[in-house]
Length: 379
Image (cartoon, rainbow, N blue to C red; front, side, top):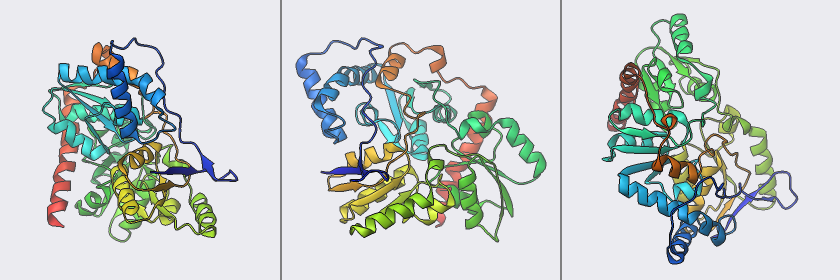
């Protein structure tokens, strides 16, 4: 299977995806035989399906880490969750569940294990604690934040309520537990349109993503007033409609029928130039569908992890066009951080939230689950 990425500024249009993260040497992994390491390395390379970036030597270097992590998961009965934007050594090496925010929230809630390790950014681990307050939730990289989540506070929500009394507050899941506790319903990139459409009333407040808020304003024009907070994802804000138009012109000139798939955290001009819009998981599934039908030339307008997953999940010829943008926050966590947290978690790696925050934020999330299930049955 071929997977090629292209760069707007180069003559032959080829670039490399971000390099595979090598062990930092901060931990001494457990002792495994040469045979065990070799078998694990071959498993990793086969699962990741990027033999140039993830060579057999690279996989041999990380194999002792993935072997010990998987051993400790079984020994300590840990359910390891990873967002799609994590690196392939995590998503295909050690994760028990890999998906977008909505599916991972449900997995954290429904997992039988009493310990959840969330390889992601802080707000996601907090969400796991909200839906499973009785469980131990570990977050290996406490410093891993999110430009959306870090850009809004609980006081911002209280101020918005004062300015717009009576309007329900809808928060994107990329928010802290304290912000969720101040809101009426949470949404994800896969359900925000439907939930906002069926909420009662003729107005609502949407936080914190201004681009998703703009999409809502366009979608519900003439039906509801959408009051939007001025936040953005630094990754998706980097994409522009002009870049897509330039790519379409160049690819059309050489006979390529480019399909553009975008995340709704992008600006309106990006959405207008896209053939398909959806959450990270929906984008991956649509990309796999297109490739299976012979549409191999794709542009994924989202974080690089989605491209990694499409490559790994597809058995067909694939041509990825355009440079993805890497989220520095999502890429903070490495295998060594996970292993250290499993061996002996530091206090700051254990998610602790006030009982009052958990109680109020859980109402916000429960309403999301309820309305998502209602809309699915009603439509």
